[in-house]
Image 1 (cartoon, rainbow, N blue to C red):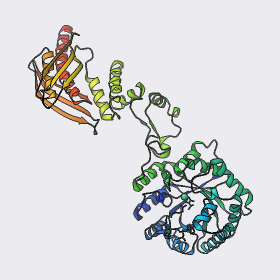
Image 2 (cartoon, helix red, strand yellow):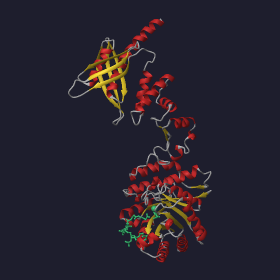
Image 3 (spheres, rainbow, N blue to C red):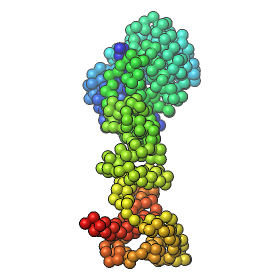
Image 4 (cartoon, rainbow, N blue to C red):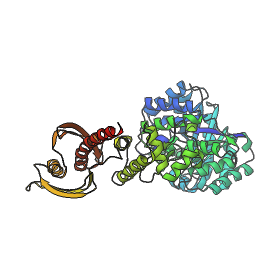
Length: 514
Ligand SMILES: CC(=O)SCCNC(=O)CCNC(=O)[C@H](O)C(C)(C)COP(=O)(O)OP(=O)(O)OC[C@H]1O[C@@H](n2cnc3c(N)ncnc32)[C@H](O)[C@@H]1OP(=O)(O)O
Ligand SMILES: CC(C)C(=O)C(=O)O
Ligand SMILES: [Mg+2]
């Protein structure tokens, strides 16, 4: 199995993401985690670019011992000298010099001829080699460079002392096939290529950074550059966690290994996301919040029976505790039952059916059904005596305005099955409902206490109402939860009345039994 070095550039190219700015301590914290993750080389920054970056690179180089620390430099003596000052205390001082080789960059940006580019590259690699034991040279914009020019300059910089040759797809333009062939061509045509390790550095402008990187590995590259969470210039770099996990999961096809400690991936991703402020999209491969979440019933059922039906990566492999069953609009009975059991409810089939219907009903009204919502639904269903006669509200309507007295119309099924409807008014909407219910219920009912609270947060939180009533002189409490405050209020009232009916029913039942 061939070994592929992991070159992490989260702290350099990753920090080049628009809007990201890490201070020295933040960089150090990420560097320590990258060391735990097992990267072979970390690019800690661009020392000549600012005093802040110089200080951060120096501190990281002086601190980290588990891997090689490198820094970026343009092809000029000043950048190289400053980089040496920052990196010389490192365990294995390493410099990364870059110079563009594409016609577009040479002509318009550097304003140099190809010959001048070769001369500068050779001179600067040789200069760097006087200080650094390891020098990596990058042909910026290699994927848009002339292949024979690349072959020519690579041979020269290897002769000048470069031990790693990086051929970046700087603008994310290449395709897996084309990028692979470029490395193949270089391997076949550069006579001294065996003296250097080939490296790939891909950007994600066309969404192909990871595929391009893997193609490069298949064509002889033994160092892969990228960032955690794929952050980086423009659309970002190749996401290292995706490459490492792809190599592991598809080891049947890819005979390569890295030193990455895969179960440190999640922690590294969280840390980078928090400190850079670059949120990881929910659907991001390997580390996204939804990468191990299942909401649709068929998938949940499959995963509950055998996780590998819909999961190709185990959460534990990348340091995530477990998969998540998200109960929502697309969920089915199997997952609902499992969640109910997790929450401590043992429901019989008919109660499960009833609770499931209430849950599905709620998913039509609410974007996310939380555990608290489920608890409320399951408590209601579990504590409801299904065999007993009861009042049930079929429909209600409240007319409310600042001028007119609120009026409630309620359609109710009585315990004997008869449907009755009445309307009444009140000082407020809840009182109008309660006065109407009073008229419809065959008992002397008095409200003693009413409490309203919310289950969860947000505009779509459930309202929970607790009431204390006296029903024919007997104290009764009732509760109900609903997304609508008025519906919860009505149902809490009815629930309290039904509970006294249940008590009477039970008493009479027990008398018959005796
Ligand atoms: C593909 C990449 O990711 S490359 C890395 C990109 N990263 C960064 O640029 C982040 C840090 N950069 C910076 O802080 C600044 O750009 C600095 C400090 C490096 C330079 O700042 P300034 O001196 O103000 O120059 P500025 O950034 O405007 O222009 C870049 C100069 O470097 C030159 N240059 C670009 N690449 C190279 C190179 N590889 N070797 C030598 N010179 C280079 C440009 O031609 C230009 O030179 P000019 O001033 O003679 O026209
Ligand atoms: C500095 C180089 C390697 C780079 O980041 C790129 O070309 O994308
Ligand atoms: Mg880059």
